[in-house]
Image 1 (cartoon, rainbow, N blue to C red):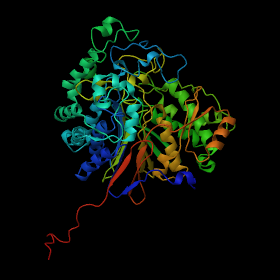
Image 2: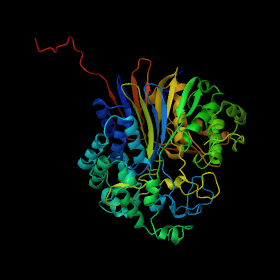
Image 3: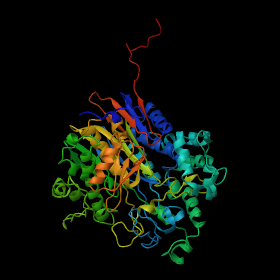
Image 4: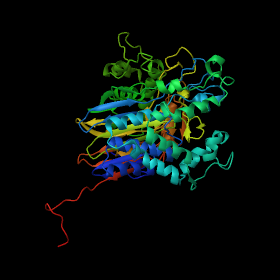
Length: 578
């Protein structure tokens, strides 16, 4: 298999190391993770350390008041997943937001589910990070938090990427606590590239977490401050369906909501593609289910022979993606609230039944499949991947959802509120409609791919509902098109939901004019964009057991590797220079 010349030369370079590799979306986070592994820590220690660091240096993407998922594979091959996604507050009502007619992406009137206090869900990030560290890590929480405290107190240089995110989030300037950090010069005067930002309130918050743990948020001081922030908002005048007795006498997120929050350990979604094992996140993420479903559909076509970026390859992928989105809309939601037919959706038999619906010569509008009645089973984000010295792997995607989440800060803490309510369907009586306590549906797709029973590569990306499409394309790039991991994560992508949405095509395809014209002839409505989803990163283990870390051009990602090792002693005594 040959890689097109336009893909062979990547914007960034990978790192190759013999012992441990981490890939995150900021070099300071990768450095923090590498530091803890150089000091004897494992993959979980490194991942949690990097996540705390990212809350400082990539604050528009991730925070302790956010949500996420972990896929963790031990060196012995045991896999566990941790669902630390947010839940809908108890005061919620199915009709609390006014939906924008015809929207496919849950838009509401006045963006009430996107900006401001009501956009926030009960956070799960801190609970998940502390739990995973306590059960599978080796370092104390204070050690994992230490680099983040250092970055917050000493400051760090604002990158052009962060500066652009600040400029695209002008609402920050209208919340006093957020404005003090990100818009110190007032509206229209956000921090620019090259400036140094200090987050002293957040440093204090991190020190409290280091001392108290997750209880600081769910049962303690930080939770009290979050609830107090909610009490400052006038919620009853901004949202329909919430009576005074529901919110007017209390905050949107309450102490009870925080105290009731729980993480979930779930069995991973498993599939196979051309003999390779695929391990990914189950619901309440839709990602793993649909990665396996799309791969099953494409396994019946010779994708490698079609060639990367060819009209045939792109068209077949688009059609499989549209079919998956039709099923996602019909079936995917919180598995504690809805019976999600994962086994059926990820089966080879279901793919065999639906594959004939994909026409090689025209675009098709798909409807969801009809699930057997007997089958019942309980853009803006960050991802990081770690492989440690023993071969243990963490693939985790965490988020506050949109850039800077709800663009509202918990006063006095430096914590940004998430806006994950925008992921819930604002139309009542649907699979993913709003309900109190319901877990939010996500598209996050932290994934591990095995070959011959051994881990081969792990990866993931930010990008909202574009995530699982991007991850699937990277898997195809490695397995079918013979790309290196660096080439695979940087290669151009496409995306669509179907259901009337356009096909987004990145402008870096080498054959862009011909590809666009061909897709239009087949009936696709095409929009050329600069990027689809966000900064993908991952780690690949080659046949010589070397670790290859990769991070793409779409974010500030930087892999870091650890080679070498302890000294080799020639005898039982050290050489004293004789």
